[in-house]
Length: 182
Image (cartoon, rainbow, N blue to C red):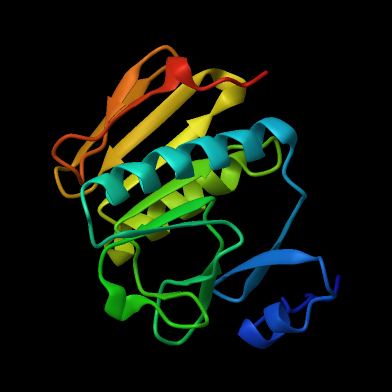
């Protein structure tokens, strides 16, 4: 009979003790190592962050935009530590020097080849469960943007030629056809 191997249980201390430059996310005791994002991934993060930040600034809004790496602790015991590609937080009481304590209002994840399973499954479930209002999965490899409106209990699929209305704002629309990926 083969010996049963006990799964190692990781904590937030393991995240803090990673070697410099190495990043990981923590979900319920499991560590998920993060690869360095590619150029297209980073371009999308930069462009989308700028559009959202610019919109909030012009409206004198209270929300803040944070691109990764930015720590999001989805629960009080810090057993879920994530670094979403873009986090929009409207309740400034959730912001500390460590990052965001609780659910951001809007999260955008840019899919990389190694993050597909996490973005479409694990993170989708966790974000919905903890009260994220809106979650976008931007998938350049599939020319697809999935928009999950958890408040309205709806999901819509778009392409990179579409204009997409943000659900948490009355008049923010992002034109993906205007975002260069060259």
